[in-house]
Length: 279
Image 1 (spheres, one colour):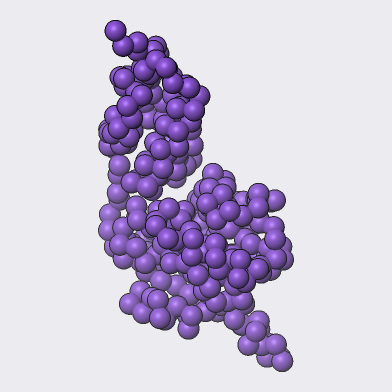
Image 2 (tube, rainbow, N blue to C red; image 1 turned 90 degrees about the vertical axis):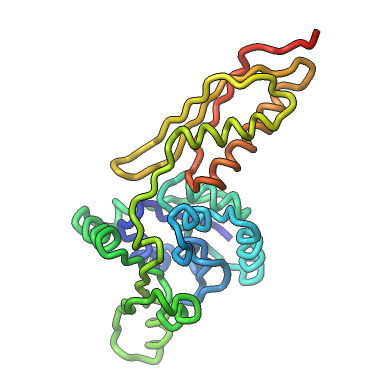
């Protein structure tokens, strides 16, 4: 099994073009917004578009909610796809999904800018932002048990009828849904809230004697949030293996911030200012 990815800002038409990209690159399965799709059917997972808030939707999409990753991993082992296409808003996101699902390293990353024009991406963003329309690359009949209240109408690509008509249609049909969170306004998590999460995680560690300044910087491309860089200064208690403690702290801070905010953490830089020696 190998893995490829389609990357682009939210609402620029990735899901609309997912089946085309999968076919062109020989991917027989894809992962989009928390679900595993194969042969036009939802095999496992739960769609982020069913979540009631944008934050929960992001957490669902990156498989950090309890039991979600385990379910999809088991399904992948069972159906044994030859190639999986992962959709994500950034390279960091698709890499994280591949790691969480214990998939092989991503062999190729395709960018939405390379397969869609600026006008096409702008049109897709209009329907996403102004009308709250989201596309899921599976036939409408597949979604009815899951999205009965959220379905709008199907998108179909029609072919001339042949012996393989039904199979080709199932492989190309998409559906439009309007998630609950589409009706809400913008959600903003202030840097002070992120700093509070970092401080809470670090305070729980006996080997951290004092927490100094915490800095949070956001990585942005236009209006798109691409993740966070976090840095902080600490005083450690003397007598422990420093590299081990710092690595553990980095992992716990990253997991806590991503779980609670749904924002990707790109870097966590920890500076040990000094060591505390008990008298």
